[in-house]
Length: 297
Image (cartoon, rainbow, N blue to C red; front, side, top):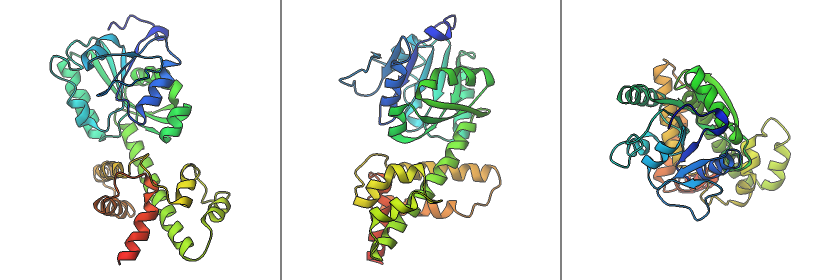
């Protein structure tokens, strides 16, 4: 689609309507005149958006496309072929919200620029805040890319939260790796502390109400407190994603010559958690993981 459109009437596409993509698409549709959406399965409720039957139709009808797929391989699979994103794309800003490899994003951007004579440009914009933040429009959006492209992406994504431009392409993914290190360390500590406290006869509801008011308090504790207390780890934010995310963090550590202290332990813990068959559970499953691990020791 032509870039002659003004920012007010730019059409935004959303590719991927999973736990995060669907509420983000809904936020965008409530703020813009036209939003196109596409996923493997057409939802019953389009939330004010318009359905694009194929990735080709999505890219052809949009000025910018937000990609909310699990990782880059899922995006790569949709680029080519008669119904692919590149089949009929004009000038297009591809906003990669997936948690992915920073070098992988830069490599993809270079290949797309070469194949399309610069018509398809890329920014990375991974997010933090979970489904609650996506629904409320309060996500932290970590932007990497060219100044002009990042400024444009920030304006387009503002209905979903707070976009901040952190640096060149890939900077958003590096920031998300840092975020996931903190999240994984925190949820592992919360799960382990829950087991220690419960086995010591301390009521978990009382404990987490008290500790939430001190340095142990966090947004993650606030969002997972009930699950930690009740032991409910029904799927929400799949724990298995942490394996991938921490692998990307390790990639950043190696690229920067950093010898991390905590990261190897976090990777080992979540590898073990997934191997124990708990990867499809919410990340609050760390409580059960630690409890069962202790029982089998």
